[in-house]
Length: 204
Image 1 (tube, rainbow, N blue to C red):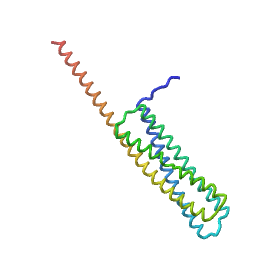
Image 2 (cartoon, helix red, strand yellow):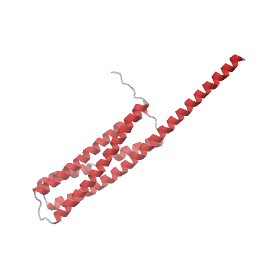
Image 3 (cartoon, rainbow, N blue to C red):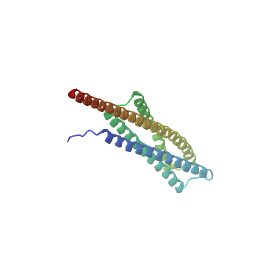
Image 4 (cartoon, rainbow, N blue to C red):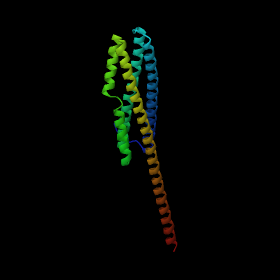
C-alpha cells in the first residue's frame, strides 16, 4: 500500500476540523462539570435535612458518578486527539520555536487534567455507594466539588491556550502564504522582464 502525503490544503483542513472538535469537546466538558457542581450542591443541601441516606440518594450518587466518568472519558479522548494532531503537524509542518513551546505547554496541561488523586476519589465514591454512610458521603461530595472546580479551571486555561495557539498558527500560515505569493510575483515579474529584454535584443 502506497502512503499518499497530504497536500498543505488537505492538512490545513484536517487540522481545522480537529481543532473545532477539540474546542467543542472542551467546552462541553466545562459545561458538564458546571452542571455536576450544581447537582453536588443540591445533594449536599438535601443531606442536611436527613438523618440517613436511602436508595434514592444512592441513585443520585450513582448518576453523579456516571456523569463524572463520562467527563473523564471525554477528557481522555481529548488528550488522544490532541496528541495525534501534534504528531501530524510535526511531520508535515514547520513551526517557529515559540509555537512549539506553546504546543508543549498545552500538551503538559492536558496531560495533567486527570490526576491519580481524581481517579482514586472515583474509586472511593464507588465503594461508598454500598455503604451509604452519610458523613463519609458528605465528606466525599466536598472533595468531589473541589476536584471538579480544579478540573474546570484547568480546562478553562487549556481552552484559552488552545485558542491562542490556533490563532497564532493561522497567523503564521497566512504570513507564509503571503511570502510565497510575493516570491512568486517577483519571479513572474523577473521572467517577464527577461522576455522583454530578450525580445528587444532580438530586434536590434
